[in-house]
Image (cartoon, rainbow, N blue to C red; front, side, top):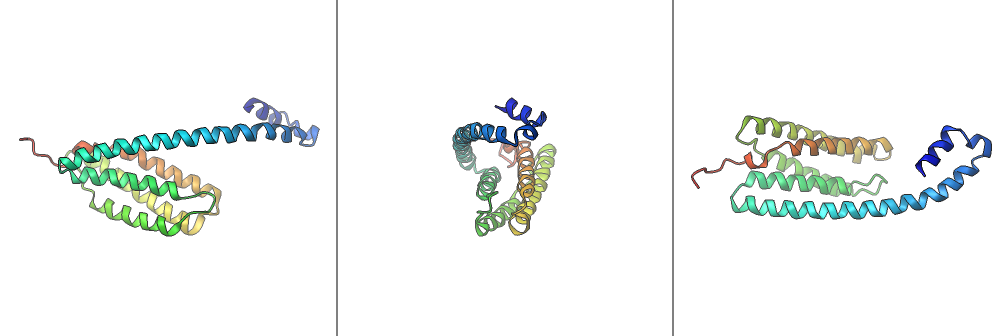
Length: 181
């Protein structure tokens, strides 16, 4: 299907058939896209549920060890994920809920301690900077640019960059632990 679409437009066939071919291709493409989107959404939900299970298990371990900074870090990432999920590129965003989340994210971010090792401290600093960029972009999106299609893409780029930074943080080093245990 992708090759057919590509060839149709690359060969400029639409100029010869007055777009009749595009209507035919669209009638084949739309059901395939719908099918793909349904499967992708189911996969995305399953993946998100599994990640949340893993996060919950990890938070419980950290809480049992009184590692409040690591718990805060995980909760911060969950809140960020929930925030990007409620931002709707079609303009149906609950802006009040997003703003409430952004305020909570800011509070948690300010509470986040940098860890004990220099490499963790550097990773936490880069993560904090990326979260601040995401917050600014999210506020910009819900206040100004929500009708501009590219704005959502930009927001998601910031989110993905931030997640990359989060993955660089060693959660095991976020709290000083008593090595005499």
